[in-house]
Structures are given as structure tokens and as C-alpha cells.
Length: 294
Length: 74
Image (cartoon, chains in turn yellow, brown):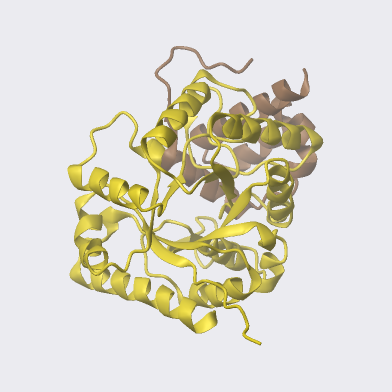
């Protein structure tokens, strides 16, 4: 008789440990409107975090509303390194210190040779890369009993990366019953850069695995070879495009298990009052989109 | 070389190339002729040159090397 209503996903922020972020977000936190917090824990290792950052992490941890999002594990780096071993040990300590609902990392790889860090880059799906990725995910789950997920990348070298990323992520996650962090601005970048429709791209991903959505803005850059060619970049420093809100509306209907929507913005890019105002408007626009579509 | 060594050699060579060689013509030539890229020619054939330029910028902005005297390409 009564249709069971799906609980609304929580809407929250990706915590940035800088004063620009604090200034822009303080009213949102004080109003109780930030329902969940995501923390890129490996960014905080080995540095002294401001007291307010630790207080926020503690607050959300105690209320079981803290999500973890690593940036430097480098899942698909071919050669296992001491740095990755140490990363796992630090993750284990992190998971004892704070209560994370789940932990995610990026699909792809960023370290090789004497590069210990770079931007995450894709790899082609082959039996060897699949075996490699599954091994690295298993090492993650062996260190913590927390649910593990992967985030899709914006960057693709070409159409093969676009077509195969969703399948690659699904086949990696199936062995650990993992989840997908679907970054909608990353899809938006691919829509523009490779002229694909939203549904074309969404249909490539295991939407039944989506537990979390990422929303952000970005920027345009211009090809040095042909300045008339615009390329969309996932730089987390701009307003959220209307098309990304449209993607959010579609994703909310197509992804039945979304628990959280995280709004990402680099704190040091909120350096003018107009940008702060627009940032707050975008945050509430996300909330309105959720209410309107579920 | 086993599969892991091939993949590692590809990744090391790719990051080095993106870091040190912003010239598209030379990059194309290296991607075609460097032995580290040989097993991945089918994949490399799908690379979009605009995205190669983006990758150069990404590595320039985010890449960090260890402070070592030798680069392990073996």
C-alpha cells in the first residue's frame, strides 16, 4: 500500500586543510547542512594539521559520517614498492584512529621508476593488468575490514580508455565486492573531450556498484597545436557546470545505492567573495537536485 | 621479460617521456620506437594527441621524483 521511499543520500564536502576552505564552508557546517565529510587521509600523513581540521574529522567520525578517499596508493603501478607497503601500514593505523564508513582510491597509476607521485593515468585492460589490479585491491582489503571502492578518472589517453574504464573497474571490484565512486565532473570532461553523450558514458559503468558520487567544477584549456580546440580539465577550481547538475539528476535515478554525494573544491581557489558565494550556491543546488529527483 | 617487468618498463618510460619531452613529433617517434613501448603499440595507436599534451601538463604539474642519482628502468 505504501511505497517504501528510498532514503535520501547525504550531501557533504571534501575536506581541504586550508583557510580558504574553512572561510567558505564555515556557515555550511554551522548550519548543520554538511551531512557527511570526505577526508583524503594520506594528504594528512606526516604533517601537522590545523586543529580545526582534526576537530572536523573527529566530529564526523564519531557520528559515523566520515568517508576516506586516498590519493597516492597508485593501484595499477606494476612494481610493488616499499612506499605502497608503508601506505598500507599507515592506512591500517588511520582506520584504527577514525571510523570511516568506507574508503576509496583512484583507478589508475601514478608512480613508477623514481616518480613517487604524479597524476593518475589509465592502463589498458588486459589479463595482466587485471591480475595486477586485483592483487593490489586484495592487499587493501587485507589491511582493513572497511568497504573499498574506486573512483573513475577524467583523463583518458584515447577512446579505448573511455570505452574500457567502466568494465575494468567493475572487474576489479567484483573480487572484493567493492563500490564505485562515480565522479560526474570526470564524466563531463570525457563527454566534451571525446564527444560522447551522458547516457553513452553512464551505460559503460557498473551503476549498481555506485555508493558515492563526486561533484566538482573544473576549467577549460586550449590545445597548443590548435588553439581553437577546447579541452575540459578536472581542476576542481571552478563553478559546477549546469550539465553536471543534469548528470546528477540522471545518476540519482540510475544509481539505486548512492549513499553520499561529495562536493569537491580546492580550498585555495576560493579567494574572492563572488567565488565563495557561488560555491555555497552550488552546494545548496546539489541538495535541491537530490530532493527534486528522489 | 615477464608481464610485470613489461608493464613496469612501459610505465617508467611513459612518465619519463611525458616529463622530459613536450615536443609532439619526438614523443610520437619515441612511442613508436622505444622498446619499452613495443608490447603496447595497439593501445598507443588509440592515443589522442590532444590528450598526450594534457598528460605532459599533468606530469609537469603533479610529478615528483625521488632524489636519487640513478633512475631504475630495469
